[in-house]
Length: 320
Image (cartoon, rainbow, N blue to C red; front, side, top):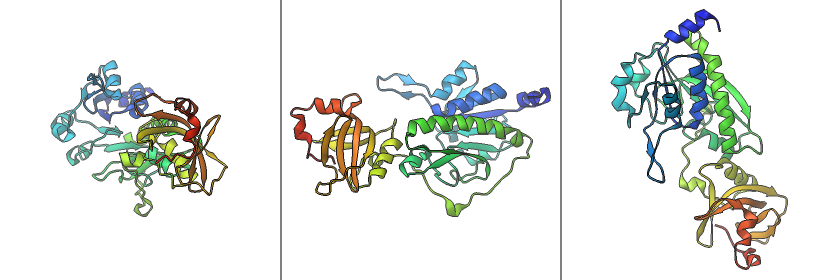
């Protein structure tokens, strides 16, 4: 970076808005190259033991002694944010809708880093949904924000393959790093006001709504691939589940078997194998390999079976 560019970067008034771990590499990349005026993030939340837990982004801000704002509702902090006189606002997984008064203020605009190839997978769960929906590729989009969710003009995009072994967790980490790199590559054009603006093709739009409890439940009338994708797409949060003998059984890992059992009911346990529990689905069998019984820790499926009285009696029972 030239000295002239460094001087410009230090003079820029940039406000960053983000909250979860996904945003951290993006924030750290910015801190290495630009001077931030402030960070806006969600409030601390109460953990299981009652202790207040700060968002990951807040921790980074405090380490760098940067002003951190945590409004419960960003609409109540409009004047405070505008008083910072930002030239540019960058958002990445912030978690609230940005008011129009804020969107309209920065002379360089408000930009958002979104982990999908927009207009595909607009919404709050693009990483989970990409795997659940069976996508073979996804990516990162950097857009100019408008008042509608993820509908702004595209500045830049970068594609990434989704492998058959990716989970929401591994894809999350890949896209987080890709988001950092693409943003740093794109910012010079935004700052020099030479960045392209490409309107999204609304006819190609798909959506990625937030995962609900209903979404987490496995439906064994689906195909092997659909079930495999759902288990991967909900690992490592919030996890797919089914019901076994009236209790929740989370399923963290499984694989597709080449066996087929036409006479069995969907969801029926077809066999106990060295590496897991076979379950009949619409077009064959999946084998559950890592599960979590209600109230217990994750374990290999065979450990779960060994803990059941008369484990051979499990075969033929139905998961729902």
